[in-house]
Length: 261
Ligand SMILES: NC(=O)c1ccc[n+]([C@@H]2O[C@H](COP(=O)([O-])OP(=O)(O)OC[C@H]3O[C@@H](n4cnc5c(N)ncnc54)[C@H](O)[C@@H]3O)[C@@H](O)[C@H]2O)c1
Image (tube, rainbow, N blue to C red):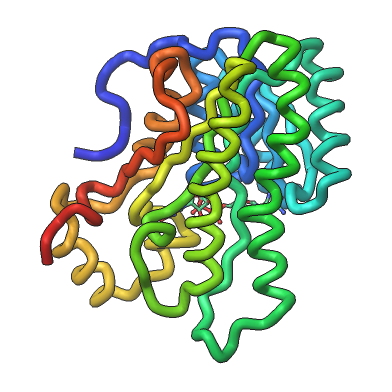
């Protein structure tokens, strides 16, 4: 069994303007593809210009509506300008935001440097402040919206060399809850996905054979996640099907964190 959908995809996001950050590859691209298949109008944010162009071209070739924005999500002004451009380009306010972009370095504690730590927190945590700030006025104007934030099992359980990453991903969960409480009166839902190990070049793609075997042995469902597995969860949280889900952290890890070892 893999993460490819085996049932027809519903069009739960028909006509909704959806911002996906880090949409040029990996999980972000899978989310953009899934949202487009569900009828979403895609605004893809990424700093990888060539990859972004290819990702957007791929969506458009399949008949979807998609535009690329080269915004660095760690920069508040750039995010604000990109959200304004999205509303102008699509002629409608943003209804869904997925905060997926990441810039990560895994370093032993003694080697953590100011520049890497700062960049990680800018892209993976502070960016969520800026996109939420920029999205809320647009979502209020359309009578509500959904924000989906990518955390990680590293935000729940510890691994070596991941002090900054763990802080960032635990921070995403706290930010998600705080935003959910504050934005509830406006019909804006904010939820987090907590993926385990997903087969992207930035993650499982970097493991050696022994690590792969060890990790698979600890995985109740017996496989790593596919980006499409996470995209399916994102589509649920972005859609009205999750209308009573607020401030949640939905773990999608093949059972990794609940298994006794
Ligand atoms: N892959 C996994 O196993 C895994 C597990 C748990 C959580 N996650 C989380 O899922 C999300 C996606 O992971 P992935 O493996 O697909 O990552 P990835 O590294 O493959 O993709 C991240 C994307 O973000 C873009 N990006 C980086 N800096 C940016 C910036 N400043 N502004 C805009 N875009 C920027 C990159 O260009 C890239 O396209 C991340 O939040 C990650 O922490 C991944």
